[in-house]
Length: 142
Image (cartoon, rainbow, N blue to C red; front, side, top):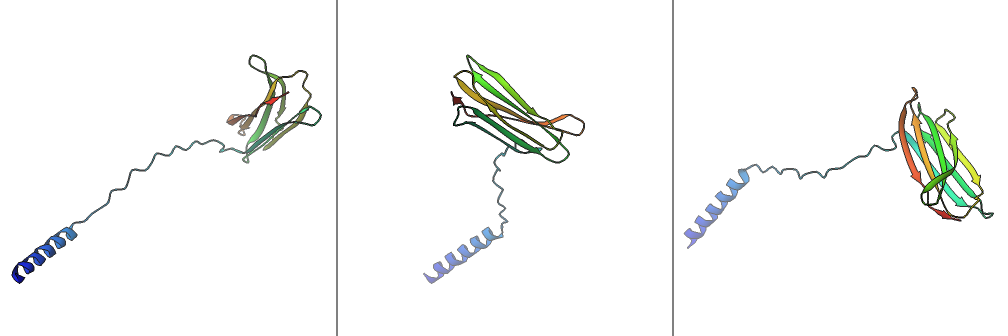
């Protein structure tokens, strides 16, 4: 009986030694595909604010900053919705620097739904459009 037990221990040791001699290389798990959208590489900051003031006017604010060596252009459109969105007023700042700002008030002449459509644009030193970002504000009902 001890002889059988000794045979089993020797056989088990041989199997373990054989298994340990194999080089096990774990294959890397498949990396999930990550899509990087290169938005805002040049337009470093863009913000807007659209509010109704206590006296019933609409305050339309937007600003932007580009990376150095680019020129900022900011176009802010105030829109009203009839059967479709229609631009009633447009303000632009394209001063030729890396910043652009608009801060304007508008007194609505009629009731309806209003929103801002803001375009932030960056131009390279040759005047070519390098990047555009577009925002739409929340709707304010007058």
